[in-house]
Amino acid sequence: MAENKIETKKAPAKAAPKQKKISLKKKSKKKFNVPNTTGCRRMKSVKSRWRKQTGIDNKKRIRKAFMGKCPRVGNKNAEDVRGLHPLGLPEILVNNVKELEGAEKVLVRIAATVGKRKKADIVAKAKELNLRILNEGVKK
Image 1 (spheres, rainbow, N blue to C red):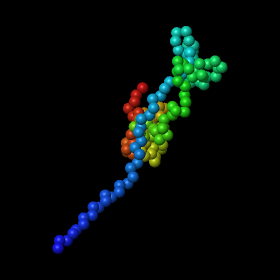
Image 2 (tube, one colour):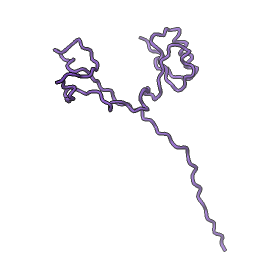
Image 3 (cartoon, rainbow, N blue to C red):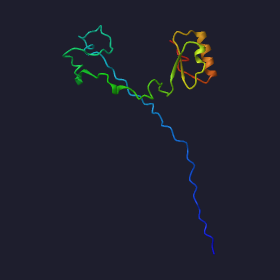
Image 4 (cartoon, one colour):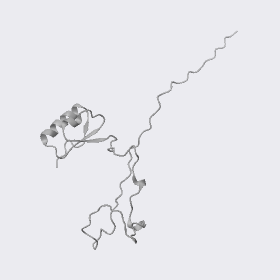
């Protein structure tokens, strides 16, 4: 009599649930300008900026297509991407070495008002903490 061996297959061990990968694709920024501010005979003193249109017959307020885009809720980026640098990490602005204490997984931007000596100290401390500096060698 031959013994019948039933082979059982072991189920693979369950891996930890995968986290959703954040796509860092931000939306492109559109320009929302005040209408009638460009061109040869237009208001040359008006700077390009956004102000909500209020006039009763204003074509921009009525949202005529030829007047350009208006800001709306749908122009926002996704909540998990908002405020992040394109490299995918949050950015901190640093004025002195003390502000680097406790900083982990961030990008460092040194303030423009910091002088050479203090900047050298900040760069040294950031390299010691393995932090990336965005404007280390920028000279104006």
